[in-house]
Image 1 (cartoon, rainbow, N blue to C red):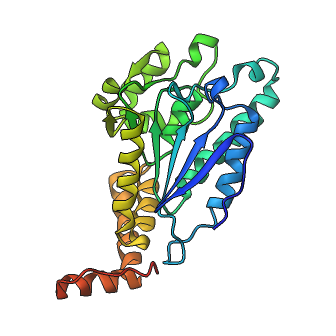
Image 2 (image 1 turned 60 degrees about the vertical axis):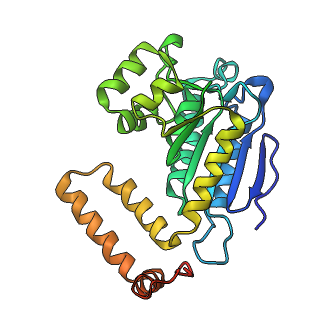
Length: 269
């Protein structure tokens, strides 16, 4: 599959994983309007990915080029010239990117290799989970500029770490290192350096690629829905997901392979 070429992104298929690197190291990979537009264009391409055996890509890894920054945040120089209407359009465009990442039927891992501040932290939060290098740092520092999170941080940070911790981080604008991010549940794993970070992300994508693709897509969709529900409504959503799984060939093949003590060959339908 062709994923296109982009002015601000490097896109490379590595086995089952698609590695997307934000390539603006001179600006610490800040989310300038051009970067947001490239991310939007890429997510439109990715939205056509299916889960059957025809599609070799089974997961996406998002990282930043260079040793210092994943994404340092929004582009404040550009924002300085925005009026409220332009700021709203900028934020809404990034919302469409993050929602598209959440809607993909394949997992998305943020491989945070340095600063993930403001919009960078919000981009990472839109991924299914986050791996970080030992030197990475996270924060929502918008209050330092008289601003508030505009790319989803107010919503997703409290879902990830709880409302009180999210409030503390957003109210103070405090920056935390990867070890603290791991402790509070913002990060899944901390790796020694950038090479180990990408290797771990690729290994996880490869592991997920061996599972039933329809099941991964189904449960990702269900988890996204359940995140905003109470227990009763969440159980109803889970029941719908469970029934949907039983209607797939992947489920038929997977159950039969378990009984036969063989390795299933999932068709992805």
